[in-house]
Image (cartoon, rainbow, N blue to C red; front, side, top):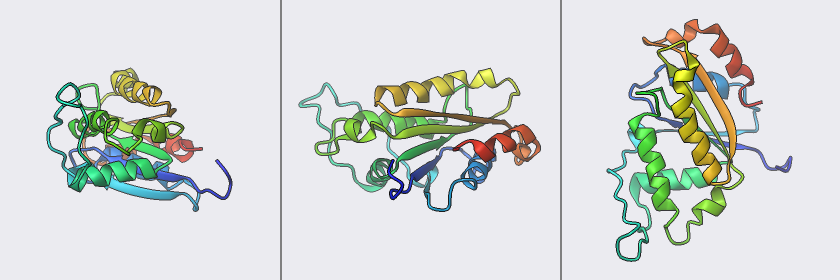
Length: 186
């Protein structure tokens, strides 16, 4: 990326709790970004999407132009160089709101004029997740979902920042995760 083009980061908060452990860890990592990096923070709880309706094989399979929260999310997704999905580990995968957001990628691939696949190519996808286990392999399905989604769209996989937290603010007692946060985006 040219030096005169600052990096843009879209942080998608996908937790079921405001100010939860995953958001805290994501904000710790974001605090280390260079001053010229643009950060946009969107909470998926504030941008509710209706259940995804798969119409790929109905009629012409073309999806309508997004409106409301869907348009906000599509526009923000396309505007960012880096997408950070901050989702707690729920049942070994991303949260329901993060999964629904990813389901909408299927629609955006078929929205006339969006050029979603071409415009996603070359962006970087990252994840930040806090889990209630010290065994980080329990997050393998979450990481696999996001890494494979990045691969499908020709995105770069930036990696996963994982931490431990079961109760509110537990992440603050995970010094290893907080240390990794300092260099996560480096």
